[in-house]
Length: 202
Image (tube, rainbow, N blue to C red; front, side, top):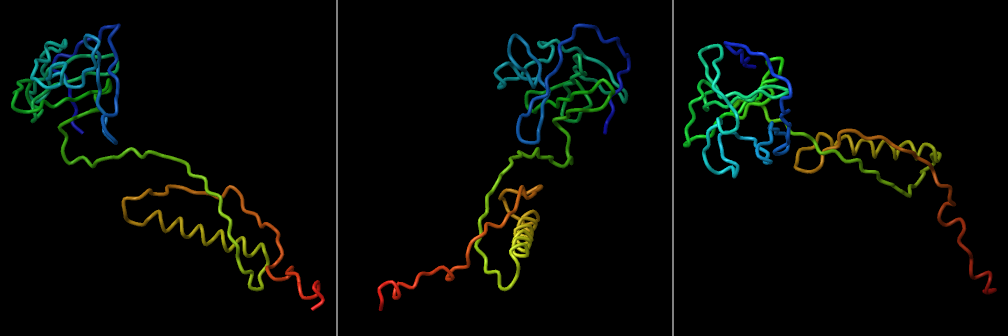
C-alpha cells in the first residue's frame, strides 16, 4: 500500500473537523466532510456534484510529498484528505477527468483511494437471522422415535450445508444451528381407526 509522507510535516492544529466514513454503495466507503451545511465527498466538484471546482474552495492547500508528488491537502481530526490527478502524482486537475480522492490516516495508511485498481471488491454482507419451524411426519420403519429425530436433523443439516457452497444469486447461509428438536408423541396411523361395522351391528 502506498505511503504518503509529506516533505514538510506540520503540526496538526486543534479543533479540526472530523471526516465521516460513509457507505456509498455495498462494500464501498467514502470519507466526507461538511462545507456550508452540505456534505462533500469530492472536493474537485461543486456542491451540486456536476461541475468542476477547485479544492481551494473547500479549504485545501497544495502540499509536496515524497517522490516529487504534489496534492491538494486538508487536515481533519482523524486524518488528511488528498485530491490528486488520476495518476496520483500531481495536484493539477482537469475538468475532463475525475480527480482521485485519498484519505490518509494519522498513521500514514491509505484508508480511501478512489482510483485504486486491482483491488478486489469487498462486499459487506447484509445479515439476517431466519428462524424456521419444521414439522415432519416420518415412517419409523422399526426405529425408535429418537433415531428418527436424529436422522431428520442430519438430513436438514446436510441440505443447509450443501446450500452454503451452491452457486447462484440466492441467499448464502453463513451459519446455522438447531434451536430445539423434539418428537411429538402420536399413535401410528391406522391403530386407532374405529370399526363402524361393529357399531352398526353389521
